[in-house]
Image (cartoon, rainbow, N blue to C red; front, side, top):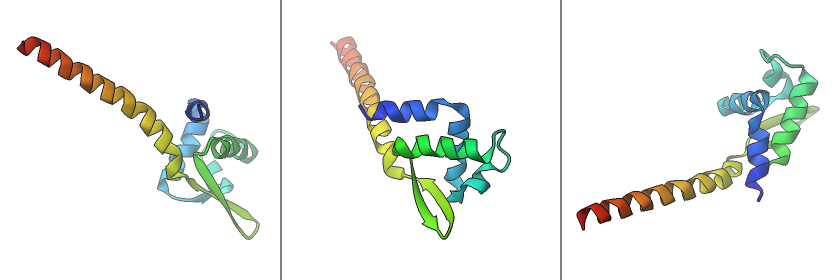
Length: 101
């Protein structure tokens, strides 16, 4: 189950903070490291985990690597949670039908 890698990748608070910074748009490691309580090399390591989990993509611009959110990476997590929502709605409907009977 590939979504497990995504959960594990987002479990670390610093990694989640890096991921959330990318919501503002693509950025270099240096830009992402600004204001973070960890070093640039640590941010690079966090980005590698996020990339391996399919949550971010990487492109080269000269000598820089630019990271961006991989929107498709969240689809699997969204599908996972949608199943719970669907199950909850179905259970709610069944309980309403029972109370009407």
